[in-house]
Amino acid sequence: MKIAIIKYNAGNIRSVDFALQRLGISAMITSDPDEIRSADRVIFPGVGEASTTMSYLRQHKLDALICDLRQPVLGVCLGLQLMCAHSEEGDTKCLDIFPEMVRRFVPQPDDSTSFKVPHMGWNSVSGLKTSLFNHISEEEYFYFVHSYYATTGADTVATCDYLVPFSAALQRDNFYATQFHPEKSGKTGAKILENFINLIV
Image (cartoon, rainbow, N blue to C red; front, side, top):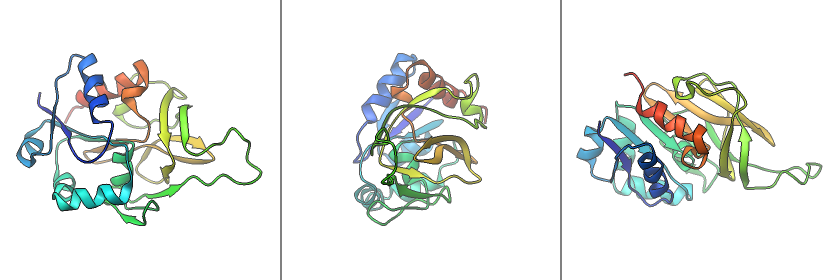
């Protein structure tokens, strides 16, 4: 099976590659359109800022390429946010694969001091609805690092609650995405990656 990790101006790409290697899975890190199109699975990870990253994707014509993919695609963290319609970060028009809005966490004056921004650390997810979560129990914990979140809607397939309920995972057609980092989430995160690779299409 041919697995492509999209190479662009965002961090965390190597971490995903290392996580796949721990599962005995080889992947190529590439920005080559033909390599990405011909892959059986595509992973779109990222840590970074929405507006500059979207500018990079448009400049290199990766935006249209990602939207046109027909094989299973997994967005991670910033990847999930860029697959939404719009982000408050830099007032950015995104890929609009999912109709959700990406908003910044805003602590209220009466919030507990435990609610810091960014949301960083382990948190539980619930409402698991897709085969990405096969053999994963409700309220399992995953690792998050983010200051912005995707709203919930029809494409939400897992929810996390931090200041507000938000989409911990989204799915529409062949597009899957997680706000948490499966590559940093231990055995449970490894199962997410394994489930994605083994999707029946």
